[in-house]
Image 1: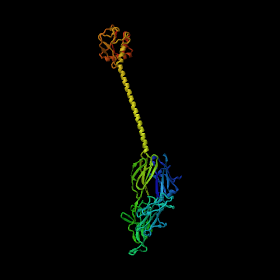
Image 2: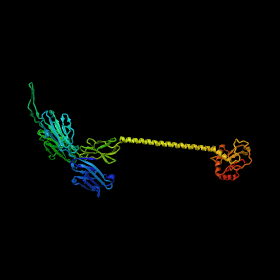
Image 3: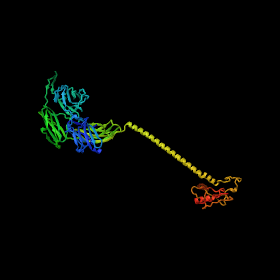
Image 4: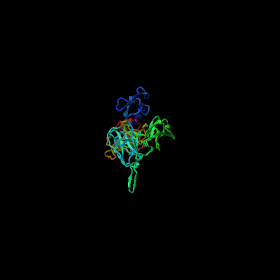
Length: 638
């Protein structure tokens, strides 16, 4: 939840981004609530009118102090003269005509600055100006009180001891701090809370020295850097002196003598000397001096571009050693160095009290912001300070998770816009919004996108998942390669077996088939080269007068013929088939292939080779001859 801090009595501005451009819709109703109140403290009704001309309904107690500015970016609720009892959680609810309702919660803190720093002695008597006189070597205890506070541990600083005790009481928030200064040197910054609710810081000077004469002790009370602290100052006076004489008889000391030391006014320590003032605004500047006698007269002079302009007496008033001037710049020449001069019977102070009056406004946004480092739970953001608007500024960082649209962290830096945001969830995206704030308001926002890294456990889990996926991927690839290898082996085996079958068919089985068909249904047993003369007579062999022709099985050319030179054997009777072409001379292996093909063709046509046992072969052969449009002549012995 974002937190906005304001000073009591000043103007508060609470943002509420209407986000109209992002939703591409129109706002119909805006409601502002504080804490758990049922009725809204401010509402804008745009259900029947455009938002710029919508009707505004502030609560009765805020009717003259509150206004919702819908034309600004972002829009904001302005509350003038903010009060302490108006501190709390504010909720802006925006209803659109079509889109879903959006709600933004924010915390508003109201700071009540301390009104006065009071210096007392150990008996509770109020002290101011020159205190004393104190004797050299005597102790001094001083008390400074401011309103409110929380208990702190006290310490000892050299010969100055601050004593305290703690009491748990409810006080204002934030509690004031109380510090002691000796001149410009910090003397003690520890304090405690009294049962009455005052923040108290006590110092004890155990042994005053001659060097402590006219020492200035300043008490400073503050509870925020948005306003100047309130101070009160005293000076130590050691007026009692002793005159001592020594001779050979001994040493003698005179009675104490009171010495009145007169001096001209001088400025007391000033903790804040710069005042930022906007045009048409007013600021009160306090000037306090130390003088004896303490009856002084004040004059104020504004120095601007070598021009000295005394302030009219109507612009300041004086009370003892204190004077307060009111400055209301209306033009550039109303800014400059405001000098305070005090004069008593001894004379005018040597150096004036000077205060710078500068133009004031909201600060400039931080510059050159960048994320310099990231871890699994931290983000480092560095920026450069912009113009402070003439006032002391602080820097705010808001961190929002982009996934859940929730605020994760809200950090404040009082010195520089450099932040380290930790305790963030790992591997998440965030929007970092940084801006500057002073007493006049806040600067424009600077937004950056960043993310945390994956945590060690997440990285280990991711690594394990990657290892498992790698192993599975390797197994799948190996399986695919093995299957591919098996398929290749099977295909090669089939191809080799097919080649062997074709080779065997082309040479051994095919030749036997051709011979079987040529010798088919012989009444006499088929002869071989080793037939004896007592089984088959010699004249039963194939014999041709000049040559014997045979049709071989050839797969490439059905019309190729071959003539084979053979033995001139004579047969008693021949059956002839006439060829339409002259046979060509071919080699013996080709004859066998041709015979194999012819055998297949003849089988397809239902024709067998002529033998003496088949008498109807001429007509069948003639049909096959017409079908093939080619002729051949086969001769077998009768």
